[in-house]
Length: 313
Ligand code: NCD
Image (tube, rainbow, N blue to C red):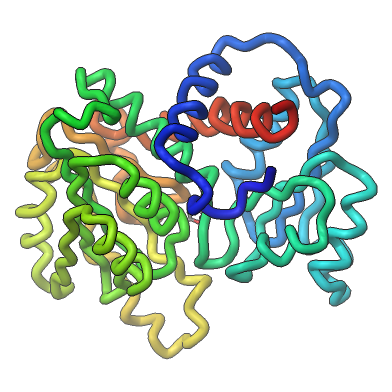
């Protein structure tokens, strides 16, 4: 089984991953002791790369770690040739690559499973699973079951660079599996959610609303943040802007700080895939609403569940 995008997932499969993830928290067995994971990262990464490696090692497996810059990628080797080569060395390839669609290309030439760890501004399915797990777990702590269709509506707001954030693209596509989710987009600098995703959400029947707020009218963000149950914040992905003339327009127009965090509901959940830049002040990290370092922790258990599912079942 490959893990390329979230199209292949439904809410029952997600539930299986959630249950497996809880099982992994105190799991001490080493069922992957004969398996090798190749971590092939052609774009920078801290959390995804390290958490996949940690997950594999915790399950008893071994890891070969290859960075794009130190591989034949730098000499101009095609992705296809690199993947065919890596097939001789390992049992699974975790691939991060700057081009959208690169994981699908890899699958075409691979005999071993490919896990998409982020393909340009395309998708990031394992981050979406750890985000859904975090949402499920945090709602559970607030006595709300994400799977219960009789519950009250949940308002989730996506804010920041919604055009280029692959974590947002994958998570939005997963959220439409669940009833009673209302989505609000608050894009910065007109970095709107891609039209194909907007249309997909529309056709699913999930309620969505896009609000474009001019940079100078920051105060207007508060009105929307006050009513959100979950805020998913992202950084502006400057590395994905090929037209440097537009760089000056890419200021961060809104920051969560200790002086405005009290506007959020007391039960609100503030998420971020990290890395963060200026969009959330570190001074609010200890606020109960902020769960981005819990996302980091959950990432290890979710990736253990994914590796287990792919390599053993
Ligand atoms: C994100 C990514 O690489 O897409 N980080 C992550 O994997 N946790 C988000 C980002 O780079 O902004």
